[in-house]
Image 1 (cartoon, rainbow, N blue to C red):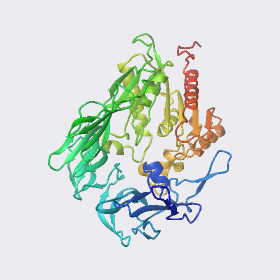
Image 2 (tube, one colour):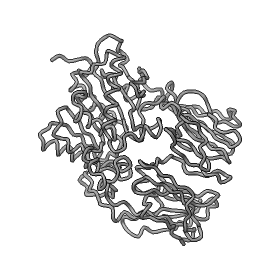
Image 3 (cartoon, rainbow, N blue to C red):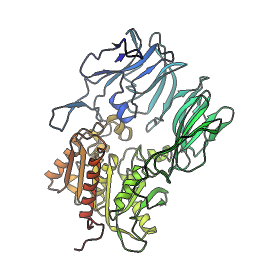
Image 4 (cartoon, rainbow, N blue to C red):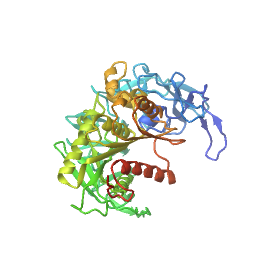
Length: 547
């Protein structure tokens, strides 16, 4: 870690790594990939000192890369030893003091910062059932517990929390009777049914946050002690923003336009016009938003633009994510909607549905998948298909495929292994097939530690189920994937080969967890649609083939 003057002079090292697997000032693997925390250092408000993370991954088992270059990565897999993360407070002369806490009991650093009230760190136990907020004494690195959260399943980590207002009020969250509340000094300030999503920041004693009372929409809200909770804006969509010095910048994304509409408001009135130059997509979504079944599964159903109701049956493509941390169904025109429509234009009715475990519907809904990744998730996808077909008879449930990426890929693979009576082909990209080959923090949250709950890992191991495959399956994986090791796809393919089960594999040299951009993305999508057309009896033009 180095520091330099604003003009580029006085460039010097503040901390040296001390080893090939040691890093200073950057987020560790768990924070960077599982917690979406890109930072590993935090300045004091006066800019004179620095709170920084030191990550030593020496003890983490190395994973060989499957790219022929002999590289190895330190990947903290479920059940394995994680990196040793410490925090240090230092000045610009290079002197530093280590921050002390019980690192054996609380090995995860899930947040940190330095506000006008002092430096702090948020730590979490390995089982993720306890989270503590610790105040740091910058003089000697000692810590004091400011807040503790407990949960029998796992403590959910809300982006932007904990935080403190200018007066020192502590902002946190509490899960009570099915609602995730914003709390101020321990007291809930948001009403039942309003699900807290994220805290975006504070401006004096005002808190800016996002929350949902309808899972497909996310709205911008504020809280002040003098007037309580207030929604900022009324239109449907997915909204976010930032507020500083009395100025609010609001970003709104809706179903009627690409990109976001940006507004700058002072005292609630428009102050500065911001013009969007986002291109209009070449595709217009032809979709219907649905609420399906007794659980009210939120879904969107896409038809080809040329299809007319009653003009003939269409094969169905289920297009879910279907698991913790991600939604597919929101009221915004984003890339997920456009990709679903692109597949629809090739002759499919495309159904995206969010089932149990997905965010936006409260803590009880999210935790229903605790201990079982696929059972309820698959049940909800089957329910969504049948309910959508009941409402729209043009859906041909005799020809159903499923595609997914990341957890969606695992779900797609599980679908053709466990429910071949419903799903007749699958495309699975960058999926976990052996849950022991998943990031420890991400997987142990829902399944626990594999040494204590081996039966859960066995039940969710798709490699073990390989001999059951009777449906066409296309596996895709980037060889430089930092989130899901490509060994997952390789091991499943090896097990399928050993069991004599035909399948296809597409490995992407140099690609990470998401597909590459430009022409590569186009070719990758075309490969998927051709596979699906071939196995669901569609010609390349989208019409049904005979035979």
